[in-house]
Amino acid sequence: MQCMHRHNKLVMVFETDCSDVVKMVSKLEEWPAFIILLEEVDRCKMGFTSFSIVHIPMTNNTKADKLARSARALPTDVYYVNSVSLAWIPELF
Image (cartoon, rainbow, N blue to C red; front, side):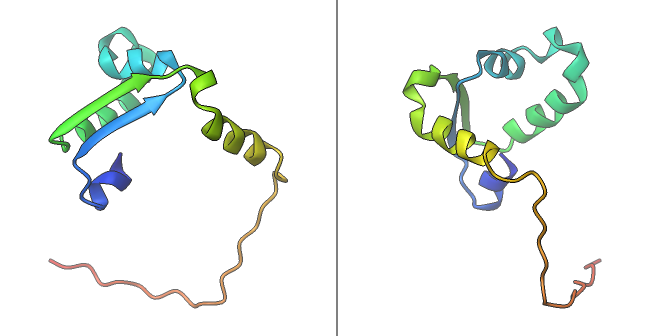
């Protein structure tokens, strides 16, 4: 959601094959164990001019399912080494 905000995509339909995620985002008060995360989702939702999240069956989500399965097949220890030295951005006040 934050990525969509950064790219100024303010009319969004998010799709998930997890029906619980749809329920959680719709009725956050019914999920007290996740309240901190769901409040953040709720704040992010307010930044969209149009926001919805819908459940799609996993059978209709074969491309994402294939990507997820291939990601699980990757080695768990992945290291990234960047040869560019850090450059700090000064804060603007």
